[in-house]
Image 1 (cartoon, each protein chain N blue to C red):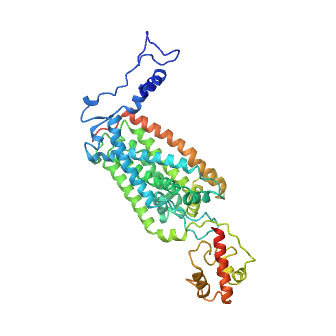
Image 2 (image 1 turned 180 degrees about the horizontal axis):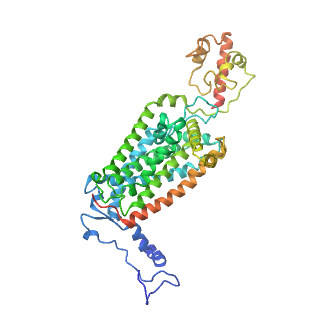
Image 3 (image 1 turned 90 degrees about the vertical axis):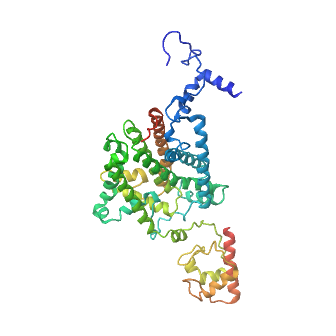
Length: 224
Length: 257
């Protein structure tokens, strides 16, 4: 039955080459922890992606309850945390995932760096990876404000004051982020929400796609 | 890709009518013990991922995500603190050469150099050797950066009393309380308690009286004898008035639930 469905689709859109491009590739001996246990260092990139998937899924469920306005943001998070079934676990996954993803990203970066795996011909993929790191820090910064509790509010205020001190474009940068030259308030929250939920994830998906396409194209770097 | 004459297509589309069998490549001729990703290696990754997920979920269950009280922009005493992975930047700005007149150095130049070098590492470290000892400058700079970031994060975090911060900023929902001014205990509350504990028991100089876990006897005892920094004899009425006062506080607490 499944085979028939597959054949029916394959007949129309020639899915086999696409499927083979995605799933069919070699795993060399030197990256396989089943053969050399020390190869577990190659897992950090995959684990980063795994946590990113956790972040996307838990974030999607969080937006079902979260309300991005200053009257209700904190209340909706409190409600989610105390009343909603398993709400504490979903928010916990998103909260801790944000830290774990930074840790995994750092470990992955260090593995690639100390193995010199970014050398020719893989320079561009390293640049894409570092951009993913920056996007991830941006997601951490914007997501920190969303619960609208005291630590969120005052940390963001400090962050925006720093943005203001950037020469030449500081004032514009602050207004772009906060929605106002002086007030950290309703506009700031909706802007950070939009950046956290739409702008940065869009950038992240594009960069991740480029990262993975380049890995598949170039293959994993050889043993030292 | 097959090109040229004699190609057959599905209908009027660009899909080749020639079917390729869906058989994975044979990796046995590759050097070493190469394995196919699908499905052999993916199954092992799946198992490792499951173990990781169990550990991760245990963490979220053991440590519920923290939430402080609702943002209060008028709270001038609050000491801001970023998330842990920004602590090193926060700590850097406390140094004399990175703050005040030199704020741009601490805020833009130093982090810019660090992150810029990270971004452009393959072009700065462009020799052919991949082993760490073949590129001592790059590895040395990375170790220096890593040690500085860990050190800055550590010093920043060690100055923070995390437990007292969490204790002082517990989330208290703004309950919708009903204040019954006709209640016989209200007059006593107004005279003895309101100045410090607020119109709606929300607190002020003293703590909020809503959401306490105290029995009627304990409330009566505190009203007469004080507790902590609250002096004794705040309430000086009769026993009957004391009973009415306690009754009033409990009634407000019940209305908040």
